[in-house]
Length: 191
Image (cartoon, rainbow, N blue to C red; front, side):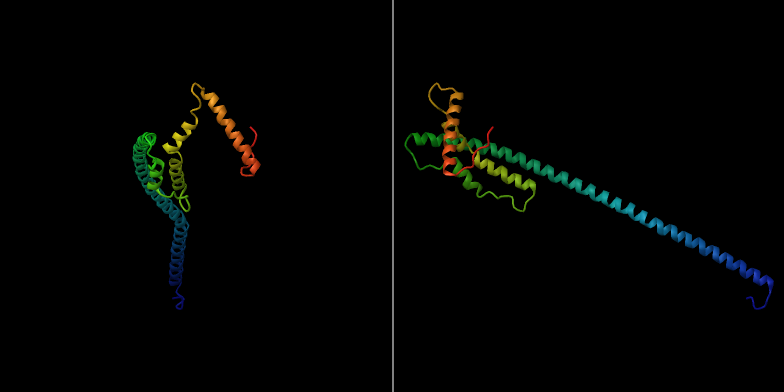
């Protein structure tokens, strides 16, 4: 182009080179802006994705919690029915024992056999562990045991509850003293 040493061609070539350089610089600026805006766009997309995931998890958690609450309500109803039947069965057993019958299944044994061994919560969530503990408490607080505790508290005719409680506390202190002497139980802290 410049070989002919034509000044017009030289000026035209320089003008074209300047124009190409300006277009290249503009393209480079646009590319840099896009490159700088890409992380921002990715951050916006990542946030939108996380918000969508959070919304889905929240909806699923709410649905499962409602299902769990409905099941717990059903457990309460069935548990109340079981408690009523256990109380009736205990009354019948007591009446039959009063008539001399001795080989009867107690409500506590029936409940324990029906439920089976209680899991100890290994490898389950905190909710699962609490449910296992709840079942264990149901077994330990069954009506037969509560009934035996009431029978022990009867005392003498006309004796007040306070006097019975004092007598029970006295027996417990005596048992604790004997256990401590035998080294079975650790001493009870004062207070």
